[in-house]
Image (cartoon, rainbow, N blue to C red; front, side, top):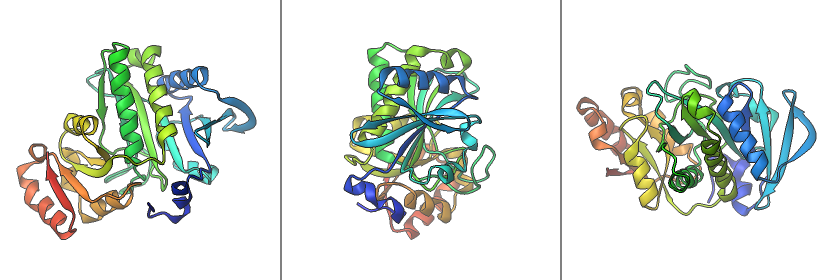
Length: 291
């Protein structure tokens, strides 16, 4: 399988130049997840420093993996691939915030479907690693039950920076300071993040683009957990009015795996948007499935 970005074709032959796990000193949850990773996995400190912080390194299934710590918010890491030019997969471990403060373990691709309010580049999304996100989701769902955590596990729609030309995902713990300090939940996120590293480059599930529904799409989450389907980019209901053919094509092109189907959360799309959206998708000659 080849991707649209030829410099990354090598990992499909099993050659991994570098996988990055990225924490932030500006983020309590991120530091707690980082702590759990360093305590549970065989990372060694290196002489190298990045933004003044120690760089840790290990191998996971013969994949060279580094853990770095930013001295800024992760959403501002737009220049990260300039510093790490060999990075082929980037996993941001991060806090999650929401007004409801509902305990949540979540995963999503970064990037902006329209304006760049929170980092990144306007109308530019990162490459979505659909199967890696699904593996993360599955681990969080399984461990939530095993650890008896009162947390929701969910996909999130594509949002916030950075906008990168490599596969990237945020694995998040939230949604309030109480959860950010929860070491048991942080350990679940740590294990889920490491599972994505372990399985990266494996494509067991069919990748799809999701459109419609809420930002935390329970329907897409259930489909991914129950069926052999992996969602890459997800465009929530609130973003559909600003979604044109260019953004749809970009979301399909900037998915690591080949996307041949769009899954529509049909009840989660405003009636006035359905004719326009349907017409665009028909012009793109891509399969659709209503969920």
